[in-house]
Amino acid sequence: MSPESDEFLRPGDGDLTKVMGVVNVTPDSFSDGGTFLDPVDAVRAGLRMVDEGADLIDVGGESTRPGASRVVASEEMRRVLPVVAELAAAGVRVSVDTTRVSVAAAAVDAGAVLVNDVSGGHDPDLLALVADRGVYYVLMHARGPSIDMADRAVYRDVVAEVVEELGERLAAVIAAGIAEERVILDPGIGFAKKAEHNWALLRQLDAFSRFGRPLLVGTSRKSFLGSVLADRRGASRTSDERDDATQATTAMLAAAGVWGVRVHAVRPAADAVRVVRAWHRGGVDADADADGAGSAGGSAAARDRAVGRGRGGAGTPAPASYPLMAPGMSAALGSAPGARLARHGAARSARPAGNGADGGQARADRSATSSASSSAAPAASPSRAPGQAGDQETP
Image 1 (cartoon, rainbow, N blue to C red):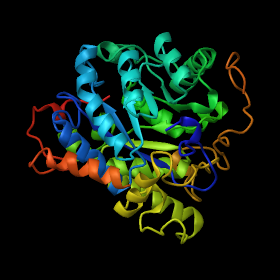
Image 2: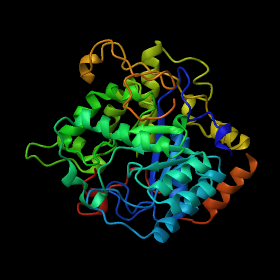
Image 3: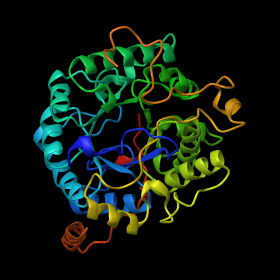
């Protein structure tokens, strides 16, 4: 599929906040590490997430939890490529979560339509690849690699500094030749940020509206939620016990008008964003629920029709603009009454200087994938004993 033919990731008016499901093919990711080591299990998990309402699946082969060591490129590629290829062949929109140009190139060749770069766009070769292939690109705020990013969580004014640093990187990304309309921004919740920094950024998301770009936010199961839910002894909730809190943030993010949320548990997130739209509209329109799943494409029937059309055909255009919040939510979100996120794609104001100018076969594939293993698909949120990889702190 040519990215030019895919309107899915481009904002359009009145649609749902997008749900990005996370499939980590790693032994040590903070939440689902070790769950999807078998590519067959990972593909099944991705397909299940689409059935539950995911709009795209983010596949990663290297942990980015604080303190994580890097894996060699060949191992990262071995982990992600079979999963990307199988999901893409089944008509799923796939994002590859990587900072390496070799992995990104192979994943795009295998069908990925988006490169999710958590390095902050610091590799010119990776930027050149994205520019050349014309795929979508997530630019996330970061301050160095996972191994020591906790030491870099020092700010005088976290919102102002993150906005400034992200603006500088956006200028570099555009200068490298990546079309601005293909860039999605991510404030990098948990990456070189303490709990208080995360909350400050979430309360002031409208600060990013100056860029006029869609905003992807990932709060799912992160440690700053666990600390809020600490018990009387001060013990933080483990990652597997943070899903309810995650959905609270998902609903508020959807109400705040973000383009997308990155989550581990898809069904409750997809439900949350649909409820927010119903809140905005005073009910659910018939077109949105024609398949019983809304535009997130959560039903198997909707996905099968999308598969039949190829990877560019599912869903409805994404919103051109989102209100900052539902009526009555300004106090909860900590934003000034009447504030609004910028209309995505509209004229930008107060931009930092230098930002640049403005079926059938698919079902057979899935059947072949399922027959490759007789093991049951893993649970969406498996329980883990304390001390396993899933209990390690998240960004």
